[in-house]
Length: 472
Ligand SMILES: [Zn+2]
Ligand SMILES: [Zn+2]
Image 1 (cartoon, rainbow, N blue to C red):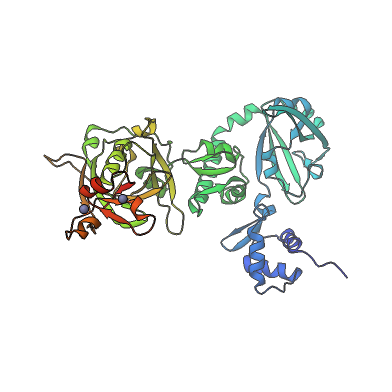
Image 2 (cartoon, rainbow, N blue to C red; image 1 turned 30 degrees about the horizontal axis):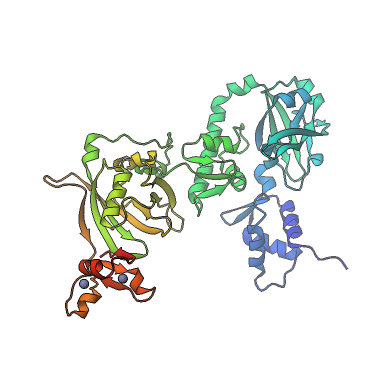
């Protein structure tokens, strides 16, 4: 009896036979035909198989499955020739190259042909190099594809390029064209256009992502599929393109937003315009520094506690922090705090959280110099303020309005607060009086019912106790 086919083999077999996009349901039916399932919900079984581990084999776009060999067929990429490659007449099987290689294709399977379609002989080379690390000297081995005849015939120099065209992704067949450094320089405007198209495609995927960040190797294929002309003249690798784009940053693995887009940038992005600068702190004019920002600040875990305050736009985040510590009765010179901007990315997506400043009351940091007006906030914008990273007291801040200062008013000021629900002194109550409590006593409550006390009784009866201010 034949061993039953695995799901992975069935998916692979269906993908290999596909010659055009196929509706997702049809794709699943084909897989189940090869690999019948006893599962309760076989469609779900296949879908969850596909969700993990197949991102480099196929794309699902608009409920259609497109196998990778179709996305990459005829797509070209440019490899810059290093001095070592030029000298040895070989191409390194680099990370960039491997993105265009099917995972199961090993370097010995790779076949090249020249511009006329003539097969080239390839010799597998193992290149070792040593690197000094903190643990000593580590030796690495990399695979290179020796093409010494072709390199010699084309007189390939360091910094020249090899343009590689994907002929058959499933089998690892590629065509090679030699592009001198000079010729490639002349095509600079084509490269720039291509880079811009790739950056726009990746940014579109970033905007559409739930998390607000992308895994580079997973985004490579869908980004190629979004290009207006995937087979056009190749630009730079995606990580170079992303790093040069003002909207994004990458460490080569993850792709993130470069920073909170300012309000102006957000409008430009929504309109589809290209934002051409990284965020630099805006300079605040005298007038902007005088304008008054009204913020509503509420405790995240208990929104019935809130304060509305007004501060001048010229206030630094450090001064904003002072004001908050003051109105919420926090310690002025103890505990760290932080401001984070919460940038909404649309329904059903996680907001982008951008740290603005961490304030250390023991030490002045440069982030604290940022002025409120420089953040370019508009009413409705939200910040998160955390006081004390140990207790993590989180506050939601919303900008209510920006207005001209009123005459004879001193800022900052507290303009509104929640209606208080007073607690009364226990000791006074025992004496038949009703006095609003100002402290809670941790020592007397012994972790059970809170004990509330007034100013006088705090001095008299709880002087050596551990007490805290009550916020109303
Ligand atoms: Zn009392
Ligand atoms: Zn006490």
